[in-house]
Length: 82
Image (cartoon, rainbow, N blue to C red):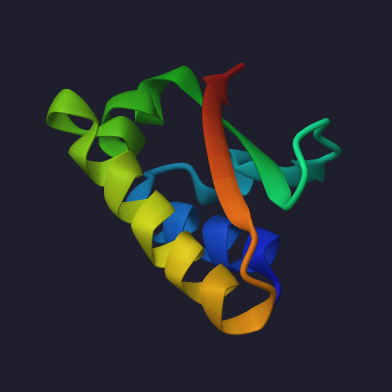
C-alpha cells in the first residue's frame, strides 16, 4: 500500500474541501524515514489537526502501522495550509 495515497485518502474523508488536499512525499536526510507533506485549505486545518493534535496523531499512527507492514520505515507527516 502506498503511504502517500493512504494519508491522502484519510485526510480527504475528514475535510470539507477534499479537492483542495494535496499530499506528497519528500526526501529526508534521516535514514529509514519517510517525510509526507499534506497541504489543505486553512478552513480545514482544525479538522485535520484536532484538539491537542489528536486527529493528526491518529493519522500518523495508522500510516506508521501500514509502513511497518510494508517497509518498516519511520513516517513523519506535516500538515500546512494554503
